[in-house]
Length: 423
Length: 129
Image 1 (cartoon, chains in turn green, orange):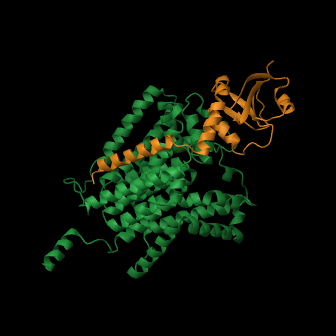
Image 2 (tube, chains in turn brown, orange):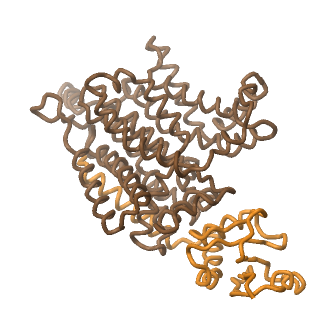
Image 3 (spheres, chains in turn blue, brown):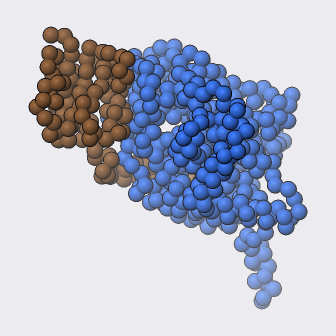
């Protein structure tokens, strides 16, 4: 794994540790002067562990030679500049409706150790059943630095996540093909819809980030780099669960997609180590604190809707509309991917099918959701966000396949050889 | 590319974006800042562990208003449910509210504090005489 990717994944996983510890400290009423050093020690330990170089044969660390290091750095700086520049005009100061209605509201409650449980009294428009990864991270820092920074802290968090996603994909593809890596990176950097969703300060981008991290980690685990990446992939899935309710669906599909990697005799401990803590905290939250989910609790007889054809039509109509309006380049990449599969006479990758299953599962949730005008309203308000959650992982999977196609710049040696021949 | 250099670049980008964002003026941010300033007196009178009823007696106040005010007053519990009746009531009215409407808010109730932010008037009242 690229060193830069390790820093990004270490930041993500350590923020999960922070969030879990902080939530538990509220539950157990641990004083803040104990929580703060405990959190910082755990962050340091996670960073040290994740940053340790990959070892295959226990003797020499795995190092891959980078193609065009200077060009790669220039592209990175240019892409980051475009993201900073593009983010500014689309970011509302306090985020979107759900930011101050749900996520940052919960963060404000969690920043107050004496009154945080009052959050669950808000029955209307507050969604007290939503998991607390994002609010706990923001709540911890609001409590640490003061409520004066109520606007700044969530912004830093969400901007970081929005920045990490394209950079992580870029660094991971860079090893294989600089042209594909740069193209995908710039597509993200100029994608106003992607930046706008990051700027809304909703938890969807965080979920997208952790789902992407799970794909990245499992690919490294499959390359035989040890159990560390199994633990990291499981921790990222745990974070998906602890970020949003639909994260549980994504995590479940992902785990079922890799039974041999996660449940083999060698890896099961590593898997349990990564997933155990977030899953346990999530269950504590759901069993003792969270209110019932709106879609699930308010709806009986949902299964009869499985046989209503018009529901499927409406879902498909919204999906195509969103795809054309907000994810146009994903659609183009999707068709290129299919074309490459055809030309290479190979089927799509397993990860591609996993993502299709996730989309199918989301569609099923809409089919089972309350009747009447409910489904259209739900689709209108949330389908684009669900697609946004899957989009980074999908782009990563597609670009991995593109990276193997030979349309990269000539390698340095080839350039030298051709020059010699010319002489 | 060294990982530490990539990380440093990301940290610099985050700092630049944050500084830009803090100094930014936009309609939504400025409105919320103004509402927060108007609520400062009310916040002082409401303990952080309090629960109160929130009413908007008139129409013409934005739909998202309740959620913004609830956010600004958190961690207090701000109820709009007719089933819950707390002693303390926070009433929010437009600046040009008629006297009769104001009377309906304050009649037979003790006004704990009142303030305004140039757009709205806030009346915090209680049952206790």
